[in-house]
Amino acid sequence: MGKVGLGTVVMPQFLVSCGSTATPTNGFGNISKERLNTLKAFALEGLVASDTDDLLLAKGLNYHTIIKWGDKISDTDTFGFNNDFTCFIPFDENNPKDGLLWVNHEYVNPLFVSDFDARKYENPFEHRTKEQVDKEMYDVGGTIVRIKEENGVWKVVENDPHNRRINGKTPISVNWDSPIKGKSTIIGTNSNCSGGITPWKTFLTCEENYDGFFGETEYDTNNVATRRPSSYGWENFYDYPPEHYGWVVEVNPKDGTAQKHIALGRFAHECCTLYELEDKRVVAYTADDKNDEHLYKFISSEPGSLKEGTLFVADTINGIWLALDWETQAVLKSNFKDQTEVLIRAREAAKLLGGTALNRPEDIEIDPITGNIFISLTNNKQKGDVHGSILKIEENNGAFDALHFKASTYLAGGEEKGFSCPDNLAFDLSGNLWLTSDMSGNSMNKKDKPYMVFKNNSLFVIPRLGEDAGKVIRVASAPKDAELTGPWFSPDGKTLFLSVQHPGEQTTDLKNPTSTWPFDEDGIPKPAVVAITGDLIEKMNKLNQFEII
Image (cartoon, rainbow, N blue to C red; front, side, top):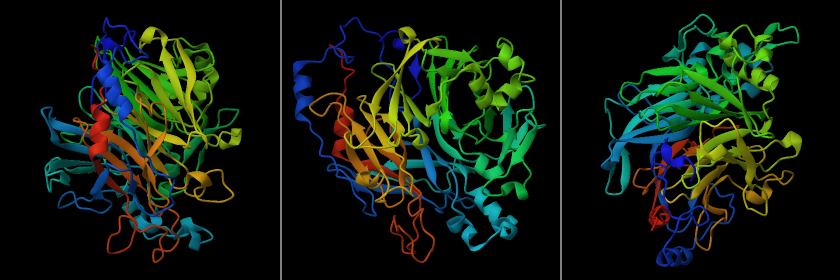
């Protein structure tokens, strides 16, 4: 276990096990023969790939919808669009059935949200209205809602004072000593993909494909800046600088206040996974979800700080964390005017230092059994990697603040393994690994694409022990065009919260949608958050490999 026992993995369901004098057995500790026999006798019945327009679940699982796009969360607010990351924090650690659910809203489909169809026009931006953009800005960001489980069903507590929206117009402070493009308060958050949780029980939501909303600032070889326009055209109505987006945002669930953490760098953040060291300093792992971009970690120099410290980029070839530090790196001093510019232009800084180009690094989770860090590399079609893989990082001596590590492939996607394009990851109470797939809607179920055999996107589990250990088993299949995202276990391990994002995304005519899930009377597909329960969930979470004897 190395130094894993010296801190805390910031996860919903457990702390990393403390070090033990027991002799490890395959990384799991000594397990009784009776326990091993129980594990061997437990076998999963996985689903076959399906293109059915429904949320299909393996035997022993069932689901109910907690909340969906357009549902009221209060007298003034409604649930946003395209929900992604979910995170649940109970009010009382002794009562896992009552607490606050955070949900990201990544992006919008204007056809559904603002009744704007760009395909009708040769120059679509000429036909956009401010009212349409306002609707779209409202439906991104995130939602905080109180939920309670009663008689096996999770329900929203209507008009609870905690229920609120954080959206594209919410004022958000900057956690940095210098303003960003002249502002210390930024308007709104968008492109909220995955996220994390802090040791002090606040939510982290990550701005990923921010350039789609307000464009991007690009620099030529002479360091002259130009602004690339966005695909949504919001900048035509709200002239906010691109540099205001692309950050990790922390949200206080008690009052909805938020701040953008500049020290963690600016890029297409997929997630932010924290580990708290024994001295209360934190290590934050985050990744840039784009072809040939990088893996980062931030090591704080002060307890509980996401401002004071150093941001590093990974050289996975040589196993070195390289500091994006303007004061100590000559190449950064010669290319940027100060540390603030280094952080704003983190992608360029990372490449100058020799960060390794990766194949769309997305979600990051820390293995509670070994302390290794797992990173989803979704794919990189331009480099011939169509199925992706899971990267494993082993920090030197198991120390999360180490500056050296070993990188290897934990698992590669493909037909032989039965999955493709890994995205979100989650560990249950027993350390089993759950993962979702992210095959794009325009590639799924197409005979001329390499994903035909996998059919719809799915949720998988990889058991750690028993006769199914190491197998990739499909336990859920998404509706048409949809992606399953944000898996998060309740503290007692009896519920898996999961987002069903963008069902019917390929729809071109609202009267003839490609999906009708979740089967409302209006027939319009709607993103939603579901609660998955059942015997299978409980059994998987009771196979507790942390029982050292």
